[in-house]
Length: 228
Image 1 (cartoon, rainbow, N blue to C red):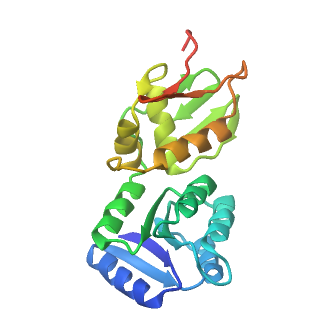
Image 2: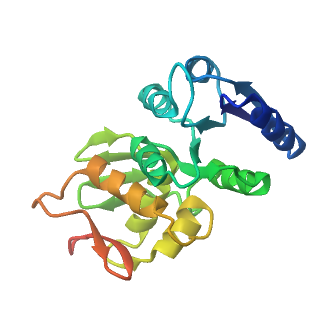
């Protein structure tokens, strides 16, 4: 059974959401402030964490920062409706996805299942090499210039897609569907923000140029030298 941790100070909402999630086959534990939620997330093992932004003691952003320093558990953040800055900051810190509150329980379950699909985007387990980036699908690990780089599940999936299509333009629709497990919707900046994180974590290419290039109106392209 998939084990979830729901951290939200709205006890009534937690009760409603946990009942729905349990009916869908998830095991769901609840905590009602950031500090106790972080303590439990670090102490025990969960398949995913659902994390509200606005909470007492520690807010969701600080919980996410501290959790990411220790664990790579998938995190879906809940943000106030219309607060785009919250969703952007959450993804920049390392959230795998986000939903605005109040959210449709069916949408929540669909997003959760997408976040939990953390296996390779293709069955091929062959190690990928593009310039100084090495990606190991089976290990879910990458190195840049021989140094390990920590990625979230979403970031890893997107990079794997780009590396399999190195030198070609990959649309945001394809990246969202294959990398995040859902269709791209209007005003959804999740792919853009995950790509921004990848650029920061991978650093520039050996010649100082960007490793991942934005193709206006097309999508993204992982720059590949001829020998790749």
